[in-house]
Image (cartoon, rainbow, N blue to C red; front, side, top):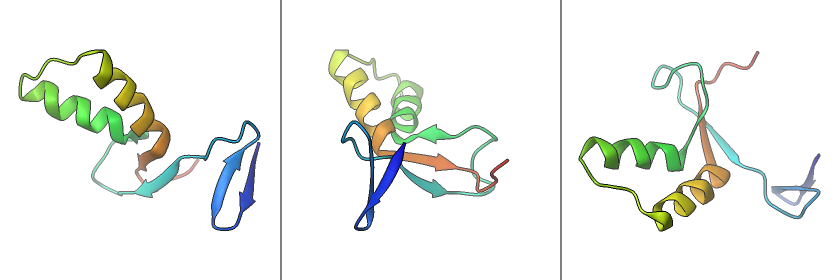
Length: 72
């Protein structure tokens, strides 16, 4: 469950909820995290991921999520 605290949302565990950014037309039907965007971009250029990259991807995914603007 999330609750509004000032202008920020927090979960019951004290973690902040992800920010959702709507980008209609730029992404598919699935939501995609910022960390996944970086992972796709770096793997496209042939950069191999390490353990630190995986932790960073998870943290960035928690921080920001891109949506297509449609909610069902």
